Image (cartoon, rainbow, N blue to C red):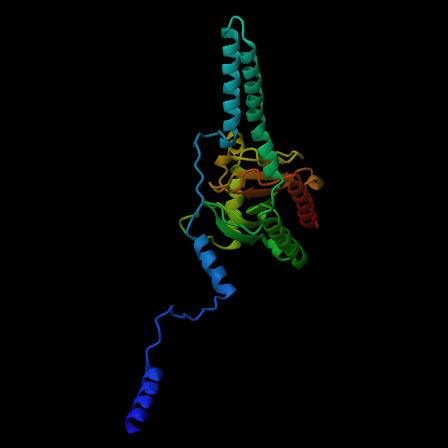
Length: 292
């Protein structure tokens, strides 16, 4: 009996302590928060950049490449048609298709520019290559609390609600009275901008020497891309940062063009018709405050 009970107890003990069969290990699940996923995705997005390669031809917009190709293709079609004594029906169909494609290439750049001008506003982007941030008010404006508030609000609205990245107001006989955003100064890249009076004096000197800026005309001057800036000679304007791709000079019609609002942007074709109309309204508003 003792032997049977011992064997029985040993069997139970062995069964109790026998190793379990090997199986897949159970790994506890980790709880991944949406915040960590968003942070990881943002970090991944920062690891690449988009590069834009251009031909680098002065005065030539790379968006006109399809137009050049279309004109070249049209010339080759004409030469091919004239070189054949009696074009076949297949050749006539091929020339027709080629002519349609060439016409499409010629029209595409104009359509692209129209679409760009109706694009979304990228307000709040204030940096232009080769410029520096300033905010300066003339003493005549700073002494009047209402005029200073209007000038500060107007320039802030231009930099946040349009594609403008730099703005200043030129007043005939007084020079630049308010400046905000990214502009070019003689000290750019050498030392920080000085006091407001020094900044306005430097902008006044460069605006006075800018050819074509102070013409007393009521029509706005819109240089929509780098090619237009080069053709107008605006690349020699001392206040214009080298990275600027479009410039709008909007005269105040209420003053007969004696006060002009200047907007700059690093984006080609930055100011569509709606933004230009709003700039004209703000130019008249600032001019009215200057005359009070």
